[in-house]
Image 1 (cartoon, rainbow, N blue to C red):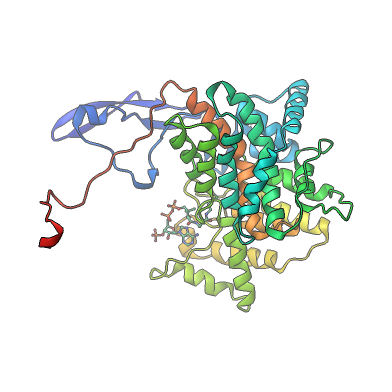
Image 2: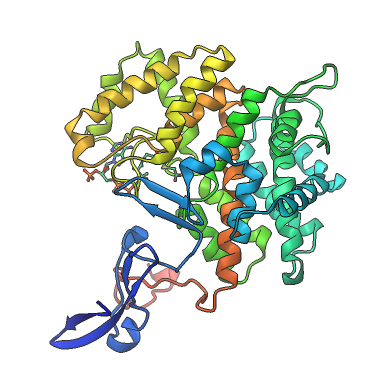
Length: 422
Ligand code: CMC
């Protein structure tokens, strides 16, 4: 199969077919408009391949997710987040020397410019940390020249400084002094230390919490052409800088249908708890055609069988809570909700399963992470994916500025009527 034939108004045109390395097939319509004057119409891009990419492979029917060919289950079990960052960004697993060098660089660039602290001070304590995160990522370009020759250094800076920014935004929100990064701690321990240490006490990072954070970050690290990644590519296609493109990705992630769902899930579970544990009521609300209520943490554009990340997290939730000695009624409600929904025809027919956001919040809670920081943690995890996709896009000879077409359905030509005659 090398081409497809499309017949329009009796005229046949041949469209080339592309096949990916995992046998995904796509019809190349890049010349459709110039040959026929007609465009493809695909709201939400559910059928549109916007690029070719060698970073992440997903088979939504089989529940497969691989970064650079490596199954998510193996990475989740055995790798460190920093190793996964290297893998995604540079395309291969690091040697010991490469990893040591990469770690060293990430450790050396964790401080943010002292003047940037003034920005944090300007926000009200109620500010959502995602607003601060997005603004600070873009603001990095004001302090660190964001020119094409500095991309490699800026990739390191972004990965290293993002966790400092995230922790400072939390400290700001609770009115505590900022805790500076420490070079003797690894990536996850350093972040936890900046989040939870207070000057009056010695804070020791719990290995269970550090391990859980490592797992969560790995599971969020990339997910091919999702909304925020496509935003990063879209913005970057105008040749906007790394910091600007990724700042835009942070904003896209914030929405409740995307990364913001992890916060919504906990709010939904709390609502069910406070409403007499009436799970069925919320399942019924989600099914009601007259309501736009949805079960957060359920459904996915690509996964139609199970989300392998959710499967890993369900097991991890049990383990982490047991190890930390935490008993959280929300975990029981979540399991009950999953059971009720998965037996319901509405969810079965639409192939709606728990996604990555369904169990992640319960683990974050047990780790002591406040609810409005959940999406920030998603952003920290997704950074290497955004960076890898941005880098791939910029190096791809096929990249053009992203500029979709539309089918106009507004008014026909109208004659302007001056204000005093209307
Ligand atoms: N609860 C109830 N019904 C749902 C849900 C849900 N969570 N998700 C989809 N549906 C229904 C939807 O109403 C539609 O029904 P009908 O065919 O009768 O109109 C059908 O299922 C198909 O849904 P869709 O909105 O066309 O699917 P989509 O691919 O456009 O949306 C989604 C995918 C993830 C945005 C959606 O499933 C959703 O809103 N889920 C809740 C939010 C959520 O958990 N988001 C996190 C996604 S995973 C992490 C990430 O990548 O960000």
